[in-house]
Length: 203
Image (cartoon, rainbow, N blue to C red; front, side, top):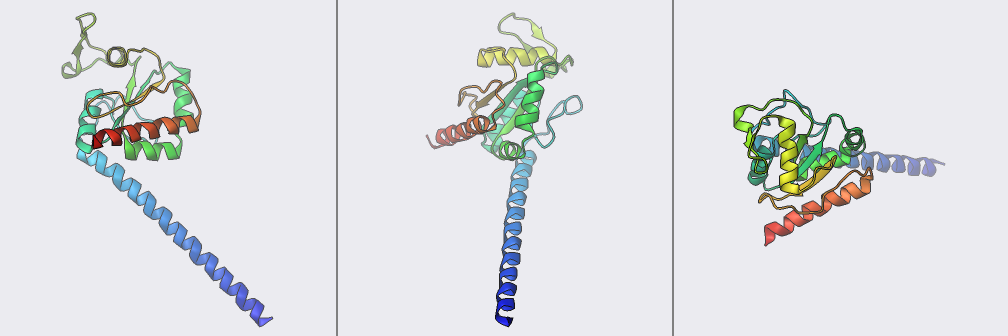
């Protein structure tokens, strides 16, 4: 009987220490991910327009494409560019299902420089952010109009919600990801972008 109690006591102790070890590993992983995110943020300039717009909770990044590309070059990470619209129901669904997913958020914050561009934002741009359209030769003064122009001129599309992955050299690395709420497909898209970028760095 005493032997049985001893065996049970040993099993309980093994289970306890195993759970502590797993917990410590998880804490170390979380800490490492946090440090990677902080390194990206501290290496680059602060994001503009954070007083006007906000990211889905848990994500960090930029609301200006040029700032995102500049940061991408500094930290040697690809840019994940997200085109959306305030008025788009599909955009909200994408954010709820894909961008608020904790695993996706951790992967995006660690492996990419995230850029969010809102195509129907009516904010008037400060002069230094205004651009001259190559298409109409006029000055684009509104944030949303600039976002539309950047998607049409760089990616030859006006569809949203839409994700694009580009390298620090601004070359497109993968096919775009349009409206699809499949988490596995979105993860596959992200992974492909990282692999293509790593391959590019080795060339």
